[in-house]
Image (tube, rainbow over all chains, first blue to last red; front, side, top):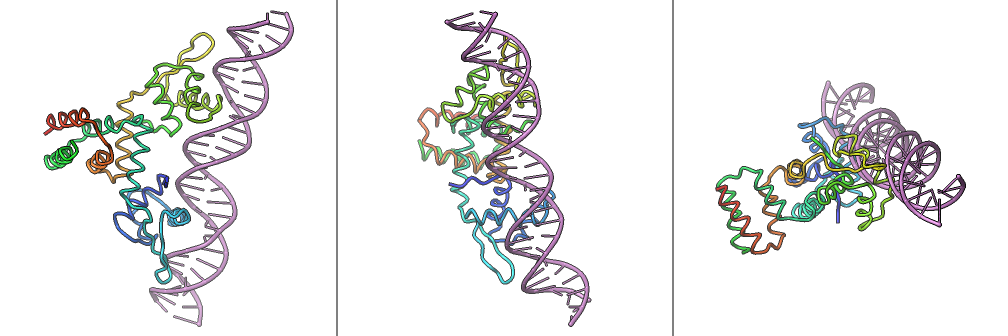
Length: 120
Length: 120
DNA sequence: GTTTTTCTACGATATTTTTCGTAATTAACG
DNA sequence: CGTTAATTACGAAAAATATCGTAGAAAAAC
């Protein structure tokens, strides 16, 4: 059961998206949206490695990191925790509100309907 | 734009649920699930008041607090932030996963279908 | 081959959040 | 009354996160 901090989650997302990456690559990505020092990113990734959230392999002189936790599983856990803390545990009221706020495309709506058919 | 911490959110939920409450009442509620000192709860509620997350009124000698932010609005903001940080901004993939993990009742499914009809 | 750049490791500092202790005040109780 | 209990204010410590600086090693550039 992992509990990534905000900074950690940001890095996890990049790694899920990009696949195995160097600290430099992740730091460059992060700096597209805000200023972060290289050693800050390095440190966080080292800590994550220490907690077994990331695996790393030596690629010559430097390290390549990748997520050690699956995206789906992690999201599932985060979702559960979020529903608890912000919606008092009610998945349904969360989903209703999410759908209510979101302008969905026809394709997206179809996809959800299909999912619902399968469930009901 | 508020950004409640975890402890603050826990208190907000209780206040939304219970309506105006004293520190004692909130602290008692909190202690049903975990140990928290009275002054800890007091301090957090005072900080929240300072940030205008809570209003308070003097009720004789003690204070009665109530949420100064609406549940719906706050949840909407939290949702947006959560979808960003955990699902890369995709509301739809979050909803799909939430529905996939959740065993919904027939009534709940109907409700969502109705909502979807209204949208599409 | 010397200088510059690029890494890692790691300690130290800063910031944010949570928790608690103490003092002062007021109410309640006997 | 005088004592006990409950309440607020507030400073300070503790814990959790995030940021950075420096040193040392290795590679790259010149």
